[in-house]
Length: 244
Image (cartoon, rainbow, N blue to C red; front, side, top):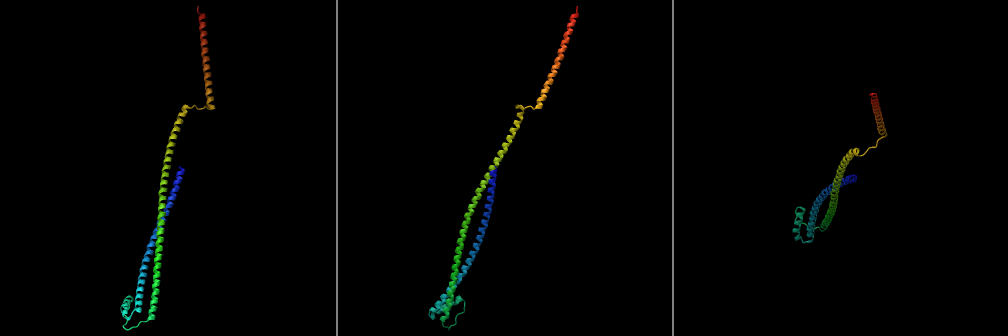
């Protein structure tokens, strides 16, 4: 019983510890889910902003390149597109191409395009890495949770089984003790009847003295009766002698 109770108590401690670990694991997973949602939302917004800026720069570059590469006649349509994009008023009717300034602007826009493209690629790479890490940790947490859940299940079953066994053994022991007490009580009662108890010295001495005293009384009585009979007989003989 003691071993079963000790093992059951140990299992209950282990179950409590596992449940605490499962609670902490669930809290950790919930925090991970929250962070992943927030970082993904940030990524979606950043990606949209970068793509919008990148597309705008590329359109501007295309307009400028077309403008400096094509004939003046083709510039009208290109300038219209560029003006719409940049939201600037239309250029004056009389103008001339400034190739140096144009190349400088194109160069600046190309640097902006490269930076935006790099930032976009970096955002996408970080998002991919973050998603992969999140999925890996989530899967690990699922495996850990399943393992601990099974441990709790089997340890709980074992603990309940031990408690039941201990209770049954205790009940059987109580029943046996009750039956044993009844048997011993009955034995004590019949023992006085069936088994002679050894007399103590005082008991034997008293009994012996009582026997001697009884013998003395009997002997005295016997002497008295003998004397009476003898006197009676003597009386009878005297009467017979006196008679004629």
